[in-house]
Image 1: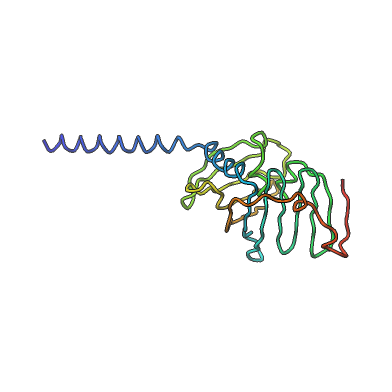
Image 2 (image 1 turned 60 degrees about the horizontal axis):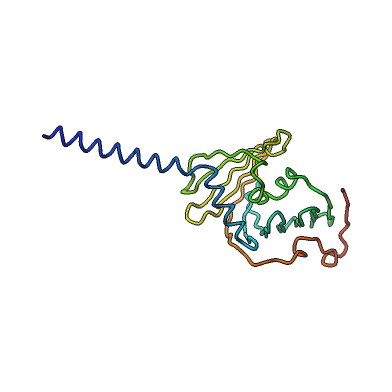
Length: 208
């Protein structure tokens, strides 16, 4: 009788573990990204405050996303992208570079741009959970990309990113903690374009 109880208990435990494993397997990289994309697609815009971990200490910034458009600000740089043209302003040099970036250049200059990138840009793989967050690795499909991979940490509760890590081919790494992120209001198109009247004395360098 005692042995029968042990066998029964082990059977129940094995069934529970199998059910748990099956449930875990259903949470794929694609399903995690689908939840993230849904958050972005249903929002007029996405507002985030983030911290970049650098050798010189933490650097805080903010970003506004709306479709493939964005506006990002840090104490050193400001970046605007209206879907075609990108303006990158350096406060230290008082210069504004104007470019027509490809997908790889957008991802390198603004790590948050990966959140709105099309499926064809990367291949996705789920990694082990980290600090209670889902973890997905995105590898650019373009073998000439300067980025070797993105690691996105997604909060299971609300499907928003908790952190983003960018690994470059030359060995550099950018680690970003997302301090706050939420759906925002509709934005005027001018938000995503450089306004030279606000920055007198800055030299504009057109690299298009």
